[in-house]
Length: 316
Ligand SMILES: Nc1ncnc2c1ncn2[C@@H]1O[C@H](COP(=O)(O)OP(=O)(O)OP(=O)(O)O)[C@@H](O)[C@H]1O
Image (cartoon, rainbow, N blue to C red):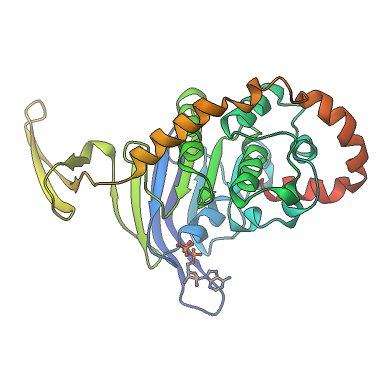
C-alpha cells in the first residue's frame, strides 16, 4: 500500500523535533489519495507549517516514513519526478515581488511563455492587470501576481500555507474553484492550511485538526452535517448498521450550525462590481501580453539569477 502511486501523501509514525526543543510533530499518520484536498486546521503554533515544510522536503524527519506518490521525497533518485509546489510565508515575503518590476517580466521569469494557455487562464482568473508594476500593487494585487507565478507550473502536490489572506472574496472564490477543478481534472493533490474558512464548507475532501504537533481529529465530508439548529458544533459517535456485511459501523460525525455570514453578500457584490467593470482580458484598449513582454523582458533579464532564485524557492 505504501508504495502505491495512487496514494499522494503517506506518512507513518512521522516524528520531527526542532533542535534543542520538545516542539515538533509527533506520530503523524496520513494516507491521502491523489486528487484529495486536505484542509489543515489548528491554532497558531499547532504544527501546520512544520508539516507542510516536511512534505515540501525542507525539513528532514527524525523518524518515521514519508512517501509522496509512492516515492521517498528525500531520495535523490526520485527528485524531479514529480512537481511539489510549496507556497508559504517565505515565498509570500519574497522581496523581488515588491520591487519596481513589471508583472509580465516576473511571470515570464517562471515560464510564462512555456505555459501560455495556463498563464492566460491564471491572469484572467486572478484578475491581474498585466500593465501593473509590482511596487505599485496593493497587498492583494501583489498576492494575485505571486499566485499566478506559483501556480503556473502544473504541480502534482500543492502545499498552501495561508497565502490567500489578502485576496478579496471573489478572487479567493475563483481561486478555490480553480484548485478544486485542478484536483478533479489532473488528479493532483492539495494540502491547505488556513485560518479563513469562508467559502470552504464543501471544498475539502478531508478536514484535519492539528494541535501541539499531533493530529487530534479528522473528518471526511460524509461525516460532516450542516444543520439549521443554533448550537455549538456537536461531535458524536454514529452507529450505522451495514446489512450486507452484517456488522455495525462506528464512526465519528460532526454537526455544524449553518452560520450567519456576510460572505454570500460580499461575494454577490463583488461579482456585480466585476460585471460592471468587465474582465480585464476583454479590455481592448490594453496592450496584449505578448506585446508587453517582447518590450520588457529583454530589459530585465540581466537580473536573471535573482528572478530564477524566486522560482527555485517555490519548488521543492
Ligand atoms: N525554527 C524553529 N525552531 C524552533 N521552534 C520552531 C521553529 N519553527 C517553528 N517552531 C515552533 O514549532 C511550533 C509549530 O510551528 P508552526 O509554524 O508549524 O505552526 P503553525 O500551525 O503553522 O502556526 P500558525 O497558524 O501560526 O502559522 C510552534 O510552537 C513554533 O514556535
